[in-house]
Amino acid sequence: MTETQTKTAAPKAPRAKTTKTADETVVAFPNFEAFAMPKMEIPAATREMAEKGIEQARETYARMKTMAEDATDMMEDSFETSRRGVLDLNHKALDAAKANSDATFQFAKDLFEVKSLAEAIELQTGFIRSQFDAFTAQAKDMQELATKLSGEVSDTVKGAVEKASKDFKVA
Image (cartoon, rainbow, N blue to C red; front, side):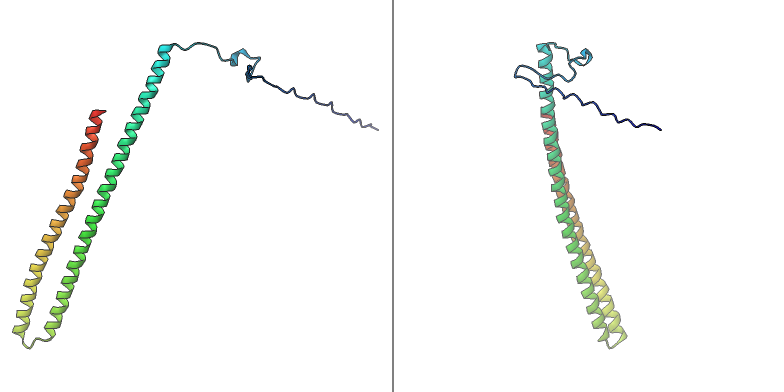
C-alpha cells in the first residue's frame, strides 16, 4: 500500500519589470564584462579615412551603375536594329519566293499552251534565262540589305563603345 502524495508546485516569482529612464540604456548582459563593449574614441583621421572610402565606394557604384545602364541601352538598340533588319530581310526573301513561284506557275501555264517541241524548248530557255536574271537581282538586293544591316548594327555598337571608353577615361 503506497500512498500517493501530491506536491504542489511552488509558485514562480514574478519577473522584475525593467524600466528605463531617458538617461539609462539597457545592456544585454550587464553582469558579464566579456560582452560589454569597450568605450574608446575613434581617431579623427581614421573616421575621415573611413568616410572618404565610403564616398569613393558610392561614386564608383554610381559610375558602374551608369555604365551598366549604358551597356544595356546599347544592347537594346543593337537588338532593335538587328530585329528590324532581319524583318526586312525576311520580307525580301518572301517577296523573292513569291515572284519565283508566280513565274514558275506562269511557265507551267504557258507550257500547256505550246503546240510544238521547238516552242517548248524556246519557252523553257527563256524561262531559265529570266529566272537566272531574277535570281541574280534578288541576291544582289539581299546582299545590299545585309551589308546595310551589318553597318547599322556595327555603328550602334561602335558608338556605344566609344562613349563608354571616353567615360571610362574621364573616370
